[in-house]
Image (cartoon, rainbow, N blue to C red; front, side, top):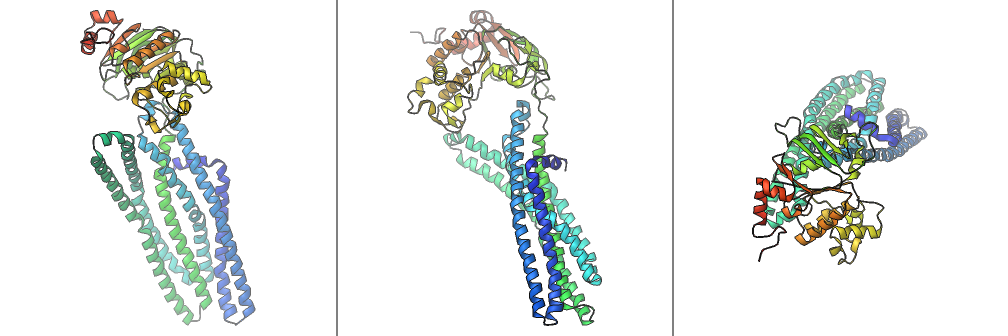
Length: 582
């Protein structure tokens, strides 16, 4: 319920619609409850005395009540829909805003498919709870209390039947809800699995087709889909028991009332009109209990979804800007002071261990190492995508934890190992680097990154459409566009995380020449190829999360066995520029 209270605050301006919807339900219920009394008078007085004017008078009153009930019901539907869908939109906005604040460590706790489910399916469940549950929750208690009161008012002896049937029905419904409640959480987790399989398959559809694994993927989807089907059947098989249970008890109640009421009519202690009106209240009371049970089932499922949404909204953001944060980065110097790091506090081993480095402002530094040597982990600490576990990382002479996060990340441009382009145009993607960049500035960045070469051949140039994830561009083209986007930021520290692995050596040489001209910018280049870093001011060799050696190309080639091995493997048969010997 704590999550529901928090989410209730998301109604904001839609609270008025929620309250108006509840008010119109109460008015509608009042009109409906008056109709049986009017019907009883119509039969017992009008029909019994053959008083046509009285019958017409009561009939008109009943018609007016029915019309007013219809109008207030329509008004309820309008305001309830506005409240439900407005509430859902604000919850999605709150979730999306919170996810944007997440650090990488926070995102590691949530699967992407699960976040999608929490923003779509779980919010829809809450919307349905308001749209379909507000009416019975507001209407049913009033109908139940007033129906029982008016039943006892009309005939207290006959109303005693409720005292037997109602507790029995309440007990059965409580047992059903108690059993079904935990099953809804399981159901939503299975939906997460289904979304994960779909997302993974669609993201890697080209690999699936290339390896002819369509049948395998279909089987994997079929398995998780059947799992969802079985879980849904098991959950709703119990949930739908409330309807036949209610109907069974309702019809038993009606039979008992007809039996006792018929005998009372024969004894002249009850009139036919009273029995007819009493049966109307019986139907209203039993229907109100049925509506309450359905509302409880909706509420039970919505509580499971509210808990899942609450996990996102209440997730403590790991990385935040400190109070009185520094908003200026003086220069691009980078220092690692006895840095150790592990991704999880309970991890047995560190990904980085006792790393100490000094990189001067404007320097070009290459980082080499085998797969899993923590090269990417090292540079992710610079823009504070993760916080160090031990030691300190400094940029511009200050600990990165002292900076305002947007300021720090604006000063550090990073071309990620996985190239990401967004749907839209090339221009819109480039403007991520600098929203105010002019046409000439955009083309200058593209030329520097080697992207102008292919963009100039495209009819639309910078206005060329980019498919989802950049599917209409090759790997090398995507890398060059990402480099251009980062150069537009004009950062003080520029990080290439294996950012030229998909481009040819000639294009890479051109990019390297451009970078060399940026003398006030610190360049950190992670690469697999020695040719990508051999001209750097210094090269850092990582081995199993530790700094193995630091030096220039010539120094490492003379003294470091790991660098010598990499050089021998990559440069065998070629000169130091990587060209083949004659």
